[in-house]
Structures are given as structure tokens and as C-alpha cells.
Image 1 (cartoon, rainbow, N blue to C red):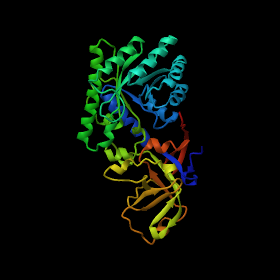
Image 2 (image 1 turned 90 degrees about the horizontal axis):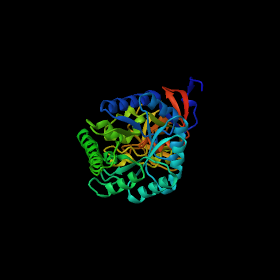
Image 3 (image 1 turned 90 degrees about the vertical axis):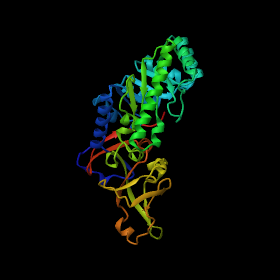
Image 4 (image 1 turned 135 degrees about the horizontal axis):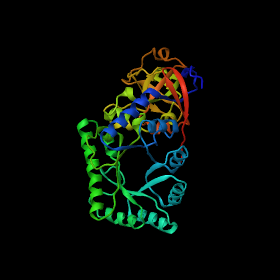
Length: 380
């Protein structure tokens, strides 16, 4: 694409990616994890785009985490070999996972039950294959996983080890998304670490192998102060950041690399509404900032050149219509004149993963210029 293409010529809504901010975010996380003596295994569900993942690999990441087997397919085809599928494996996906390994992908999977472990073991024993499997640990009560101290951990480990598939333990401190102070985040990072290390010790005490000890979330990865015994850190949304991460306090709003370009398409002057063509289909329905100190509605409003406009917010949205209004509820009579039909605005996302999922490409920008277009994919 012509590097001089002006982003103001784009049809809207369009997904914009500021390369300089992304590169800084990548370097920041890579430096943090390297300083902790661990490998970084980026979670690529955020971008689902090879140019983004290549930038992470160029910065030092040798392996990746995925949330779908389609991601594993796509990135293995691009040349990535070491991949962790970090969603508890459903039995109907075991054949697909084994096929990926047969094609040279060093794929590992996770389970958190005896039933799932038994399905993996049965499939591997029946085919003479091996499928490295980590046991998911519940370190904070946020979602799935085996709680530290639960004897089922060793039972799962025995089932996997008998089939030659036990690879280690992993956890995700998703509860960190509910925190917003450095002290609380550091404590959560320590809790995440200690939970998974306790489970690794339990397996080893039972004379079971535990080669990999994996932790990760963007807030805990950036807040951890020491990770002895942990082999790898997984994090994803840091590559772009978003308003939820800014609300947690692990980035500034100026670090957010992703935004949606939108056009003013109408007004309801008596209500103080500016109507734009980016509704919840363009921004996603994720209202993750609603429970934070600052609720950004469906996204934070900026000028076309990225300057924050904190007096405005997208407090409501329909499928294709975003309703932008004054945050204080006022109805200035000159609002249609200040933001006439055709005015371009940018909207920062609450949740970068969810917003990016609505698009098939990133428009890579520097200032007001489009310097590249990077494809992304969706689906399972």
C-alpha cells in the first residue's frame, strides 16, 4: 500500500493499529519476563495476525499460546512450532491435536479433570501417539482448574503419566482483572506463582514429572517481582493494551495501540447525541470498564489524530450505531456544529481482543498515514 495514504480516506468503521505503540508494548513485556528469568509465551488470541506475532518472535518470544486450534493451524503454517493450546481440551478436538503433532507441530494441551485426562490417554494409547498435556490449576477462583491441595491433581497426573503425556502445570490469574493497585497486583502475581508451584511440588512428591510450570496474565506478568521455579509466562493483551488494562493500572491510555476509526453520521440535538457508525458490532459488547473507577461505556472517544476527548463518551450503542454524548449529561446547542456530519473520531476499546475480533485487517498507522495493512483471521 502507498505509505502516503491518508487514514482520513478510509471507509468507516476501520481498525487502526499504531505500530510504534505496539512495538513499545512488546519490548516492555519481553524485557520484564526476561529479567525474571523466564520464557515469554505470548497469547496470540489478541491479534490473530502473523505480522504481529512475528514482531513478538523477533523481540525474543520463541513460542506462543493459542485459544483455538485454528490459531495453532495458522501459526504453525507460518513457521511457529512450539504452541500451547490453553483451553481445556474437549474430546472432539483430540484427533485434530494429534494430527497437528503428526505434521510437526510441537503442540501441548491442557486438562483439569480425570475424564479429560483419560480421553487424552485413551486416544494416545490407541494410536501410539503422545500429546504433551499440562494440568490447569485454579489459582484464584476465577474460572476452571484444579485447586491446590486437591488430591485429584495427582490422580490426573497419574493418568497422563501412564500414557507418557504429563508435561507440567499451568494457571491463569484472571482475577487480576478485578484489581487496580500495584500492591494488590503484586500479591496476586505471588499467589498465582505459589499456587502453581505447590501443584508442581505435589506432582513431584508423587514421583511424577513436572517439566513445565506456566503462569500468566498481562497484569500479573507486569507486576511479578520474582518467579523462581516458573519456566514460562503467558500474556496476550499487552501487545495492544486497552481501557480495562489502563483502569487496572498496568498501562497508560497513551499506550493503547488499537482504536476504531468512526464517522459522525447524525445528531439528536435535543438529546445531546452525536451518532457515529461504530456500534457494538464495531466495538463489541464488552463493557469491562463498567466496574472500574472510570466507566468508558463502549470506548473512549478521541479526535481523528488520537487526542483524547474526555468530555465525550459512547454511553450507548446499537448494532451499527454508536451514541456519543457529553459525559456530564449536558446538551450543548453547538454540538452538531462542533462535530458535523462526516467528522472522523477514534474510539479506544474496552477489550482489545473482543474489538479486534470484529475485523479482518489492521490498518497500521503512523500519525495520519496508513503505512501497511495486516490481515487477521477469526473462527475456530
